[in-house]
Length: 318
Image 1 (cartoon, rainbow, N blue to C red):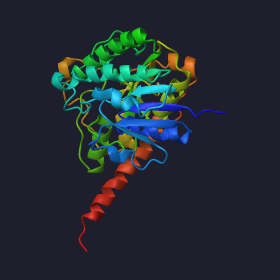
Image 2: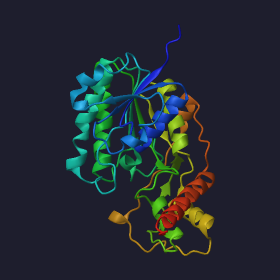
Image 3: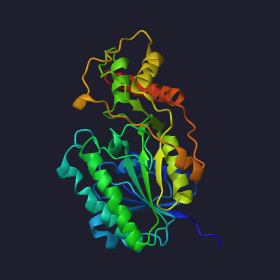
Image 4: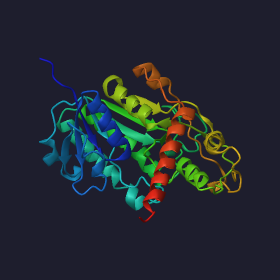
């Protein structure tokens, strides 16, 4: 008898979590999605057919345990408070995430998870000056990056003590048709579509962006092929100056539009970077990104432009 594989995802109603949940289910993997009862993002996953919704608080993980399968293939801990730019430097908001991480590891151990996978951020390595891999020296940009570093080593220690295979994943900048938040890509598209002139630093820092569809495929491969103790960086692997991405966006919208590059100073006087080394994930899982930036960003621009058009039509009285 073939037993259907299952994964557990905390923060399943977040941006990454909701896309990952949908992808696993499309691959016929059972998903047990842990969400807090009053989550404002619940709508992202409510209508996904076949999802196993698990309401609860990780602080009371013993009550959640009863609703989870035994020996899931992977346990993804994606839940994290304070991911918006406005809260990333608040130690009061970031520090409690460590307790959530510890509770997640305990829960994973109690159900016999075959892998515990914790995502990190390039903000942990903003000033390391090299491509991010297991040997890169952490140099966090803010409290968010600092606490992510703490979480990485804390979870590694706990997983070793509890005999759970542990994998740490650093994710580069993410873009998507349905992600319109306070980042430089959306800022640029929004300004240019309005006919306004965006302003920036010199944008000399090297950066990498990965489309959400490529990201979830990478996480899927890690869930079943990732090696215990591994450190994987996920991105597209372009590692271009940030200005390169901005010029591509401008040229797709209207190459005659002006850009105010170099009009703002770098914070702390030095540009952060976000370069990733895909060697480890390629070697262990066979992952290869499929969506180049020049293709993916066209779809993003089109989606945002259509949203703005629909908003304008909706404002017209009849």
